[in-house]
Length: 84
Image (cartoon, rainbow, N blue to C red; front, top):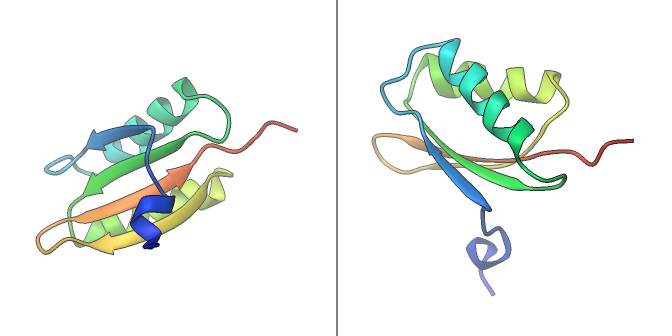
């Protein structure tokens, strides 16, 4: 079984061409609309977006599960935490 079949996102967000920090804000807003433990796939540009957004999400309490280099953009899988 491949890892791709295990991590099936509940929603997808294409933020290619979206500058920082707007891409982080849009990702966070989308995650807040999702059910607890929901998995979101976010498409980000190389450079500043893929360098900044995963760290910002981790600091905000989200769990970055996977980053895939898709040649030209990155696919980021991030999970909304279960509230304590």
